[in-house]
Image 1 (cartoon, rainbow, N blue to C red):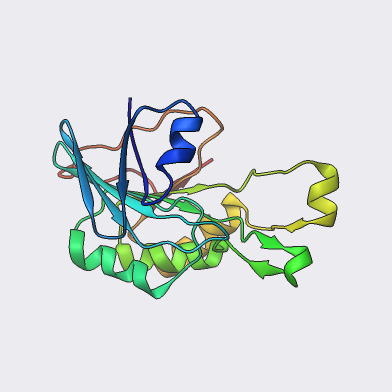
Image 2 (image 1 turned 60 degrees about the horizontal axis):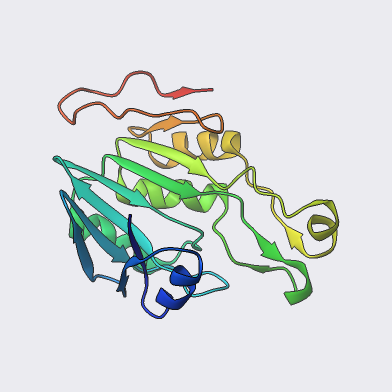
Length: 185
């Protein structure tokens, strides 16, 4: 199984059992069979990149755990059409670090969707928990899928929000097919 990681993280990926590893920095790409994986900028509490994945005439943006940073606006310029954006929305902050935010909020994710203009946007990382003790003492997060959906309607009215249950599959229609509805639960 090929695995693409931020440059400098191959040793950690090998320790986790991956053998076919490609390291990238922002705007570097890896071709994996029929997929082109391009690293995009990201900022989190640990080294990270986000990804634009292209294949079979479609493009997906995966936001990982990033903050909303201005450098992500360049994704729209470099890739033109994004069919699907997977955007973290929990607004994670580290309490002992004076509530330092390390992941974008639902509203910031909707703002990014307004720049990227994907046909479909899926909120991710909103059901995250580190356990009751760590949640209470170390972490703060308040982003929800519903808050993202509401903010998305204001920031990117032509983007369809898809709120998925854990494990629920998603099929994105061909780009020539207009997306149905606006939001589902």
